Image (tube, rainbow, N blue to C red; front, side, top):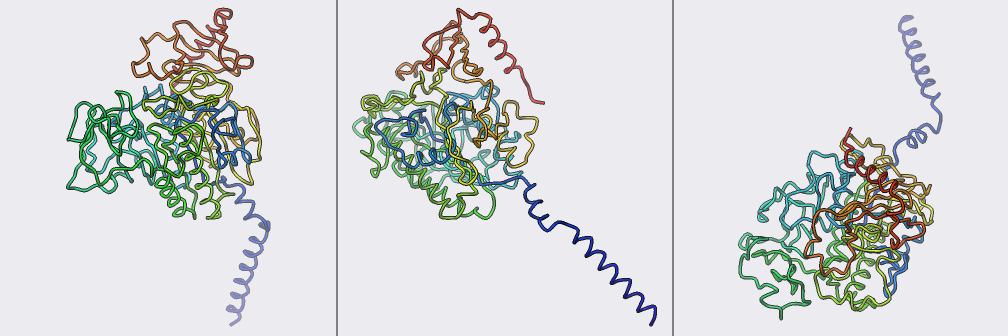
Length: 518
C-alpha cells in the first residue's frame, strides 16, 4: 500500500513537471510561430491582352473610362516603368510562367495547332505555388501550345495546363482569331458531340464551312487574308475547321463565361490559398464586345472592348469582396504586350482612335522593340497590405516567379535563370526594381536604368504580315542608343556618339544570353 502511494506521488510530480515545462512557452508563442510562417495570400493575376500603356483612364486614356481598374490603381501600387518580357503574346506568357526569357526556348507566336511550348519537367510558377500549398487555376486565353502538335480535339488533350502546374483550367486553346473555336475545360472540349467530331487544319481546307474569302457577305467585319479562312459566329479566323458545332463559342459571351468560371474557382477554393491566372481575351482581335458594352466608348469596338475588360475586373473584385477574401488577396493587373490598332480585322480601330494614343508617350507598340512594345500598365492591389502610391521602379513580369516565391517561402530551383526577387518593389515598399533587363521582339534591346540599347537587326526582312500593322518595329541595321530620361519617345539615336557604350551593352547582352542554369 505504501509503495502504491509513493508511485502515485511520483506520477503526479512528473505531470506537474510536464505542465510547468509547457507553461514556460510564452502566451503569444502560437502567434509568434504563425508570424514566422510564410504569408500565403491568395494571388489573382489579371493578364490583359494587347492593352497599351495608356489604354486605361488612370494612365491617361482619352475616349474611354475604366473605373474599376482605376479603383485598383488609386488604392494600390501603380507602376510607370513596368514591362512584359516581350512585345508579343506567346513569348510573354512563356516568360511569365517559367521565369526565363523566351529566347531561351526560341518562343515565338504559335499557330493554333502547336505542341505545348513549356517543358513539363520544368518547375513553373504554378508548380512552385502548388508546392507552397496553393490550388492553381487558369481561365481564358492560353496560346502556349497543347499536346504534342496536330491535336485530336475529340480526345483528352494532353499535355497541357495540368502538366504545367494548373489544378483547373478553362481555356481558349490558342487565340480568338484561330481555330478551333471551342472551349477546353481541363483537358476536354466543352459540349462536344461525338456525332460531330472536330477536325482542324492550318494547311488545307477541311469540311464545308464557308471561308471569309468565299462568303464575305456573312461577316460581321471584314478581315485581311491571314484571317479570312473558316467563318464561325460571323467572324473569319486563321485556319480551317470542320465539325464541333455544339461546342462552338460565341465571342460576345466571353466576358460572362470567363467571369463565371473564375468566380466558381474562387468560391470553391476560398478555404485555402489559391492562385488564379485570369488571362483575358480582350482586347485582342477579333474585337466583338457584348451588346451591353457597345457604344460605351468613343473609339468603337476597341474602346468598347476596353470597357468590357474593365467590367470583368470589377466582377472579379466583387466576388473577392463577397467571399470575404479581399484583404487576403493580392491582385496583380497587367498586359502581355503593348497596343495594336489594326491587327487583321476592319473594326475601325484606326479611324476611331481620335486623340487617344494607346502607347502614351512611348514609341511603337505590339511587335515593336521600342518602349511601346513592352511598357505596359501594371497595378498591384492588396487592401490592408499595399499602400496607395505611384512607383517608377523598373519591373519585368519575369520577376513574378522569384518575387512570389519569396512571398510564399519557396526556393526558386536551379532551372530559373532570369527571374529576380523584387518583392519589396512589387508591394510598393521601395522604388528599387530591376537595374538591367532585356526587351524581346524581332531583335533584342537592353535597358540599363534610363539607357536603352537596341541591337542591329540582321536576320532578314520584317515578316509580310507586319506590313500593314502601322507600327514601327524598330528594326534597323545600325545600333540604336537612347537616353529615356530625356527622350521617352526614342527619337534621338546616340549610338554614333557613344561607341564605348554600344560595345559595353552588346557584351552585356551576350553575357545574359550565355548565362545558364545553376
